[in-house]
Length: 322
Image (spheres, rainbow, N blue to C red):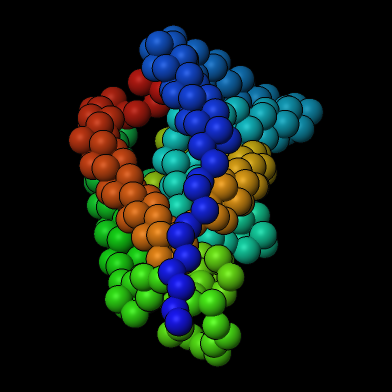
């Protein structure tokens, strides 16, 4: 005789406290969002001016300015990771909604941040040095680069949604709606979830997904890095500008790496609250979370696309406060 098992009731105390905490943080952030953005902009302008001052000291053969330049660039990178930015959103959204290994959690945001520095260097060398474009033309080129990068981020979000549907729907079609109190043989299509873990939960990202994360982060160069490179190129000390940009990217990468590790541990803690659910419920939940992550990236890409800084005829460094 086959006996149906009922799923154990889900403990709502822990998840409810987490939801309330997240809502409280979101309300506080929304209430002070304008002041927070103004503070980030003021700090960015102040650090830009200090970095430019250190470049001027190097141009006057005051080589102690080089040490302060690299130190200031690293601090700028760390503070840049605290403020709002697309790299943090992409990394945390992906790691929240997709299972990854510990090494991938560390390396993906780190290499993505370094890629931002490389893309800024390529942008300046190809357009400013190679084609000798004027300030207004550089601003227009930056506008196109940011528009294209937003489209690439949105396309990556679409790919994540399609990948989640492709991997999860076949398993959900074959998964049984109840299990019996009788021994059975585990295989790839049994749908039992291997004692609650689930086929979807056991998967990690492949190299294509990880490469997409790095490119999605690095395809949009930091405007502050571009400004430092342009100014150092005008002074004839482009090598110092490149060193400052990569040091800046190092600070950003280390900060986002710590944030990504915190997101991974939070995700593991949240998954422990779902251990009492049936495998089919768990698979549906994980599918919904992965699709939500892809949709969030698509929405974020749309916001980036619509809020790109307009083209400035005098060059973006005027608006950046340099």
